[in-house]
Picture (cartoon, chains in turn blue, yellow):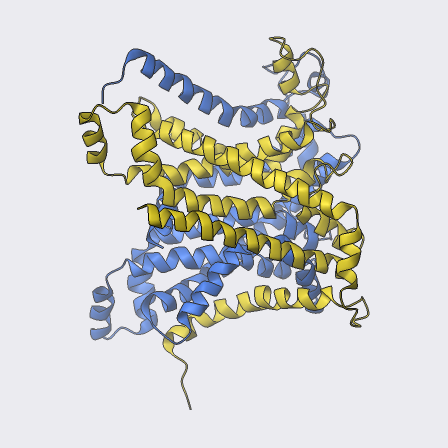
Length: 276
Length: 286
C-alpha cells in the first residue's frame, strides 16, 4: 500500500508517541530505583542518575519483608497455577469430548464465574475460609485463586481440545490405549500452545492479584508481594527509591515470562477468544 | 450400581471446587445480609443501615464515573492503537511488543509508579507540564478534589488499553483484504475505510472486550486502594472499596453482605442491559 509522505510522518509520529506512553513509566521506575535519596528529592528532577547506586535494592533485599513476600508469592502462584492447570485439563477434556446431561448448564456456570463481581463475595469467602481454618494459609489463597484462574482456563482449553481431530484419539483407542493414555499421550502434547497460554495466564494473574490477598492473607508469613508493596507506600514517610526498587523486583519475573513467550501467549489467547 | 457419565467424572473436580468457592459464598451472602452477627434473622435492617449511610450514594456515583471514564478511553485509545499497529511500517514488531508493557506490568506496580510520577513536589509529570508553561504552579494531582479521580482513571486507561488493542488487532487481521481493495477501487480514503469497513468488522470483538472491561472496572480495587484508599474526603471511594472497608476495617460483615447483594444485582443489571441492547444490535445490523 502506497502512503503519502505526510501520511507516513503521521504514522511514525503516532507510533513514537505510543511507544513513549507505554515505555516511559516503566523506564522512570527503573531510573528512580537507582537514584540516591538526595537526588530523588531534588527540583528539577534529573533524567539520568548522577551517581547510579544499588543502595535502594540493598534496602529492599536486606532490611525489609520483601524477600519473604517474594517467596510467598512464588509458592502461592506456582501452587495455584499447578492446581488450576490440573483441574482445567480434566474439566476441559470432559467438556470437549463427551456429552452428558447438564453439560450446557455446567459450562455456563463456569463462564459465569468469569463474570462474577469478585468484590461481592469477599465477605462470605472470608467466613468460609475461617470455617475451614484456612485464613492466612498458603492453601487458602491457592484455593481462592481458583475463582479467577479456572473459568478462563477451562474455556480456553476446551476450545483447544475441540480443535484436535477426534480421529487421532479413536485410532489410539483401537490400538489399545486407555482414556488417560489418550489424554496424556495424544491430546496434551498436541495442545501445547494452549497449555502454555493457560499456565502464563494463571501465573501472572495470581502473581498480580491484590484484593483477595489483602483480605485473606493477614499474617506476614503468607502476605504476597502486591500487599508488601502497598504497605511500603502507605507508611507515612514513603521511601520512594526503595518502593521503585521493589517494583522492579516484582515486575521482573512477569516481564521475563511474557517476553519469552509473547508469541505463544497472545496466539493462545486469541485462539480461545475466537473459537470459544 | 449406576455409573456417572465419563465426561462428568472428568469435569467433577473443577465443578466441585467452583461450586464451593462461588455458588456457596453467593448464597451465603444472601443469608448474611438478612441476619445479625449472632445469626438471628433481622429482615431488611442491614439494607436500611447501608442505604442510610451517606457513603453509599457517594460511592455509587463515584463508581459510575470510574467505570464510564475508564471504558470510554480504554476502548477508543485501544482501538486507535490497534488500527495503528495494523499498518505496515518498519519496526512494527518492536512497537507491538512495547505496547503490551502496561498490561504486563503488575497492577500494584503501575499504581506505585504513577503515584510517584504524580507526586506534587518531586513528580516528573508536574515538572514536564511546568517546563513548557502549561501549569504555573505544581498541581496536587492526588490531593486536589478536581484531579484525583481523573488521575485514577488515567492510570486505569494506561494499564488496560493494550488489552483492547491486542484483541482488536486480532479482529483486524481476520478482515478479508478484498474488502479494502474493493473500497479503494471505489476511491475510498483511509477514514472511509475505517468508518465503513474496519469498525463494523471488529464490532463483535469490541462488544466482548467492552463487557470484560466493564466487569473489570466494577471489580477494580488495586489502583485506587493502593494510592488513595478511597480518599481524599471519599472522592475516590468506589463500591468495591466500600465493601472492603465495611467488612474488613469496620468488621460489619452483615452490612457488607447487604451492600454486596445490592452491588451484585446492580452489576448484573448493567451487564444484562449491555448484552440486551448493544450486543443484539450487532446481530440485526449484519
